[in-house]
Length: 436
Image (cartoon, helix red, strand yellow):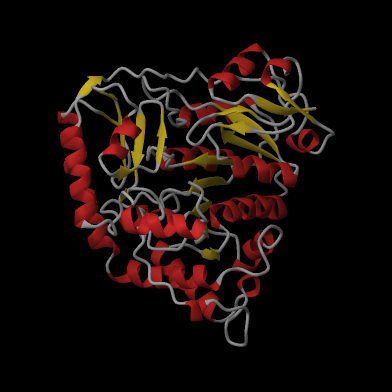
């Protein structure tokens, strides 16, 4: 039956499953339509903030221990765009070394900014084919191998909650005298766990936080942090190249309200959440599930249910909606704002699980290393045609194709489609591609 968006949202509110998906407020955020305003007198202006919005940013600087923090109403995507534009403007960076498990927002920003990317490939993590992390040793070798690198870009934590050795990577970057940028979209809460593993605390130069993913913030609310060097004016000038000139005051107010929460309750409540999830993971192991080595506020599981359905389908039948699923894995994103009823549903789902096999049925192929023919920008803006993947052999991709994070990019714009790329595209359910 066809329904409108409003009808679907009302139905989900009334009868939907337990919300172990983002955003972090879990549907308990009070909205006030009177707060939906524009840049009227006294309301400040996001990209030229010197009043109430700049005061909110200063609160976050104190909370995160940063030199500069600025608000984003355009999600982590805008923070990534601003971060890359800022290092190009300030340091003249034209070539970046990045782990291949980047979000497509990074590739799109590099395309628009005409920045070249050299890749370092994360090592496979486990039998489920999930990409792992880049080690300091890998980074050091890549920096020695690649010429003209002006900055390093890492995603940590990834969608499964697995974290890189940011302190080790930051030390390597200091040796090479290049800034370390971290896509911390899934880690805004890391500062408030019993052990502070936020990237800025561990030595990153710049870091983007998707506050809405794990904190009580409306979708689109994010933070861009700088450890040193950058002023708020510099970061905002970079973000203004991409951001809307009408940022949502509802989103920005939710960030301000989040600062209240972080100042008063977050450390206590995230410590309790981490302890509770230790018990959830222990019960999952007892039932035979594979438990990923996630950060303390994430639950990522792998396994094949006895009835043969996907793990995600099993959870949904038990009334638990996950945030991400691939093959025989599922990722849950609990926060302190999940209710006792929702946690009881998760406990019951794990108790009901009967393992048929821990061996995955759908193992992604190893990442390929396609030939680079031209730059991201040259390929993306060249005349192109869309063809079935079967007809793309030997052609140059005009678009970047990434399976849902944390998947490694199959092909990036400007890379040649060889037989391995063709096979992996089809295996990943991608049947058409724009090519030059």
